[in-house]
Amino acid sequence: MAAKKKEAPEQAEVVQDQEKAAQEQMEKVKVEITSLLKSTGREGVEDLISVMEEKGFFTAPASSGGGRHSAEEGGLAQHSLNVYQTATKLAHVLLGTIERNTKEMKDSLIIVCLLHDYGKCGDYGKPLYVANVLKTTGKRSEKKPWERNKELTNIPHSFRSVIMAERWLDLTEDEEYAIMYHDGLYDRETGGMAVIQGHETKLLMLLHWADMWASRVIEGQSESEGE
Image 1 (cartoon, one colour):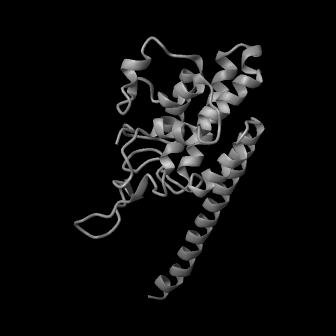
Image 2 (image 1 turned 120 degrees about the horizontal axis):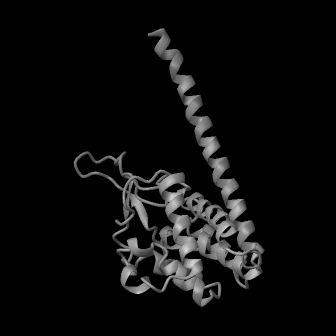
Image 3 (image 1 turned 90 degrees about the horizontal axis):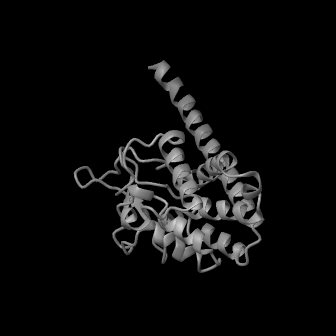
């Protein structure tokens, strides 16, 4: 019995340390994302960042869980940053020196990578993901802790991302297209296969490949993202 009593405070300390580390990581990611967005110099970017914070972008999950990527608190922002970091590496290899170093390409990569899943934090005061409480137990599911908010209109998250971003920023045609169809031929929400097949752009492919690499390899997604 004495041993068990001794373990409890140690376990509590471990949990507290983990929570502290998670909070510090979320703050670090937030600082990096806001710095990158500001570096574009786009008109309205400061207002966009303020609204992103209000909507919970920096604390929202990127998926519902159950084998899908980045379902933890802060997962959406971390995933977005992972996609950007991967896309810049791909651009370094695949694009010519002049093209990848233009401000236009640098800014577009920042915008599409960091905002491609912006719609996943929800809109109109409603989060996209809410706690998934099981009817059988009355408790939250450990396997799939989140579910889509049924009170939020079922607009594809990629389209919602563009709509929400363009309230504050002027996106280029290429940026709109890349964000809307960033799931590529895997897209089941927007009919991506019918739209983009044979009409892929460099920006769209960089975003799609980086998104796939980040979610499947860096974040270890084991199931299809479609929900």
